Image 1 (cartoon, helix red, strand yellow):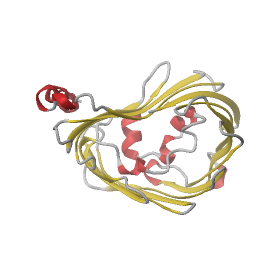
Image 2: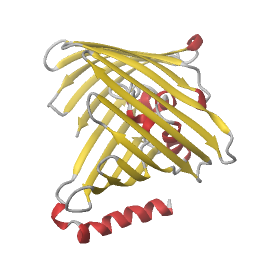
Image 3: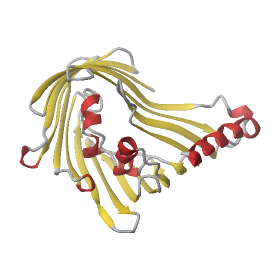
Image 4: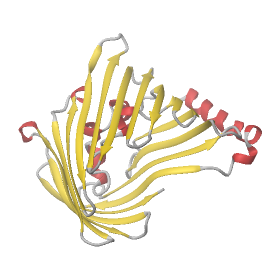
Length: 292
């Protein structure tokens, strides 16, 4: 925590002296969501998935990023905070996002943030969930190539506070209407013993007004059963779309699924109403999302 705070301070102290003319070039991407739901006891949750990036030199090759992946509940703020130096917007050094999170996010992220939080271990990196649940601070190095049609990422992490090391790789590829994605993450304990592998593999078929997606999730390092993630979306009009989604586990031990209607308020904001089934209980979610 002290090292992360020191790096954050260094980034901000460097700005005035290194790149005063560039300080206005702040790049913000991600989203913020606020959701009311019927699951007790809290009945509300917020989600913040944001990254702020800015150059540290006039040429822009050296830069910095500060971001977070956080859920906001009444009594707690489970999160991971990212602080890194960047080079060419590809190399990152510091507390970096794991490559595993580069592809195939949870099918519940947009319409049911509560389930995205409660079931984060199925689709998110162990590196991320351990930071969220246990306060681990995984420092590392990553490389990301986000170009089309083929993008990929790789990352290495070590968390003294958390007691693990990890390595992950991810890739996505688009060819015509087909979108393919895959990721794998390996986990080691402090003694070097191997703790397991997380993996996911997915395909989505996208047309102008509808899409279908299927992904296999293998959260071995989280001691959870394998799952199939399914999602389908159809655009009813320019602003209104309907979707169905779910994660179905081996033997039906931990299934969750739902349907949703999403209405575009603006080109960056949307309102969704979802009904879900989880742990033998039905729930309703009303979510407003703003994208940057």
